Amino acid sequence: MRFRYLLIILLCILSISGLWAQGKDFLFSLAVPGFSQVMNGKSHGYVMMAAEAALIGTSLYLSSEADLLMDESYSYALKFAELNPADYDTEFLKNLGKYNSSGFDADGYNAMIRREAQAIFSDSPDSMQIYIEDHSYGEDQYWRWESAGRRADYNRMRNNSVDLESYGKLVVGVMILNHLVSGMDVLISHSQKRRTQLSMGIHRNAPMLKLTLRF
Image 1 (cartoon, one colour):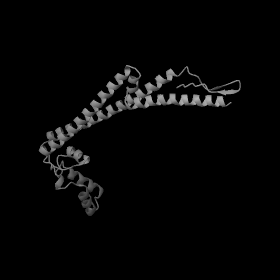
Image 2: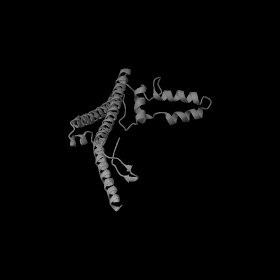
Image 3: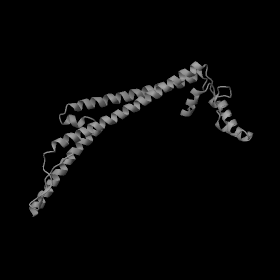
Image 4: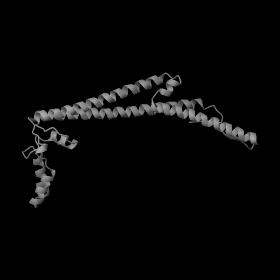
């Protein structure tokens, strides 16, 4: 009886060690696509590693180009919109491309705020004035575009930057997929190797441990 228990414990240890080896390969391949495949002599692991390197390079390039275009659009506004150098938020930079100026002229941002105030507080001049003061841009956020064409060029640079940023996010998604495919490839490979091993069962009313791992 004692020998049987020792045999069961030994088989359990062998099972755990096999699972650990499989899990280790899976984690390595999940972290670095193709790593475990290369370590186990699988040539397609090099393809996964090369794809990962290419994707990382593409992601860095797109991110760099997106930042460069955004910086260029800001410098362009400083030159052609009389914008004061400052640290502006994203919403301000969007409005900079939507309106010809920050003032109360026909195509100005503040003129739009005044129209909103008149529509919301038509019966309360005091509330209207408070709304305008709270939402309009002051002299420290002044701008006026040299022409509609200059404003269009600014928007084009910003839109191109946003597009590159979106492409970069898509590349990151492909990178994640490459990691998952690499990890699943290891699991499938181990699964195929283990199909013919023993499994747990009962023989003549006596428990027996037959090690079989199926996926």
